[in-house]
Amino acid sequence: MNASHQPDLRDRPARLTVGVVGAGRVGPALAASLQLAGHRPVAASGVSDASVRRAAALLPDVPLVPPAEVLDRADLVLLTVPDDTLPGLVEGLAETGAIRQGQLLVHTSGRYGTKVLEPALRAGALPLALHPAMTFTGTPVDVQRLAGCSFGVTAPEELRLAAEALVIEMGGEPEWIAEESRPLYHAALALGANHLVTLVAEAMDLLRDAGVTAPDRMLGPLLGAALDNALRSGDAALTGPVARGDAGTVAAHVAELRRHAPQTVAGYIAMARATADRALAHGLLKPELAEDLLGVLADGAGTTGGAGGEAR
Image 1 (spheres, rainbow, N blue to C red):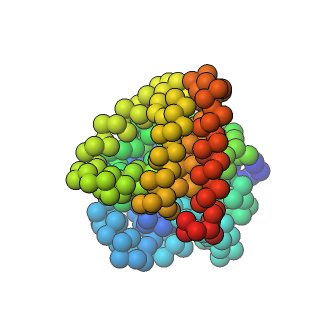
Image 2 (spheres, helix red, strand yellow):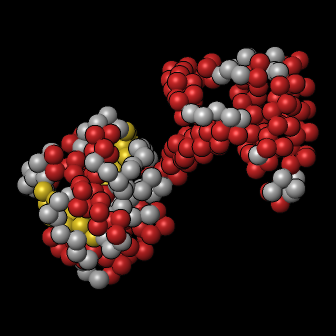
Image 3 (cartoon, rainbow, N blue to C red):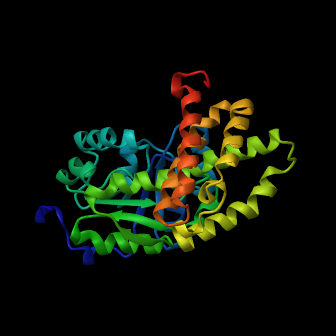
């Protein structure tokens, strides 16, 4: 970082004025958390009805203004926009002269580190990437969920302490992520969280089809125990017909899914193969049972027709 762009952070006021560009689900919650720590939200931008409602619920009395005006009012600006929007937003703000020397510019994208903020750095901003590893609802409950939440932190070395301090003030736990590791870090979170929602939703649909009247109540204890065991024990927590090598049971599953929910077959087979690989590597699945199991999965995959086949 150019030393001319780096003021002495010890001269910065202990409490900051905070602005939010992009009043989606994340920005207002983070600003509200910073407000609890003594900082002062002064402006936010958002045009949709949902944005207006979120700002009113989490940041009452904070005006909604254009993005350039948010930057004009705030010492610390949270850029909480979709990943694909972020580079263009940063370039536009830099080109229009909206960014001030010494202004803390924080984005919350999991995909990007601080290189995406390079135009802002050239304009004199202090770049930080603080990504909360949490799903957001856009309601006040999000502020409570930030307690103990891990944040993926990327920042220039001279701003590392400032970045970690902001995370701690929001109730989070800073986890340092190297710039080049951000895409892998984000892919891991998406694999674990976003795909989990899809798996749970599909499982509930299938249970309803099987006549279960309260699939959420049935799955809750089971999934809670499975998640807890997985976080504690990793692959050693694997159970079920794939880990046991019950090829007949897996074949029955594939047949039933093909009959009742063909759109789920490809996902079931892909996850079963991944589970089999991990169970084999961990010594849970006996090699002599794995052969029949993998044969069933290969046969099942061959009849789904792929993305454009009959199962669609």
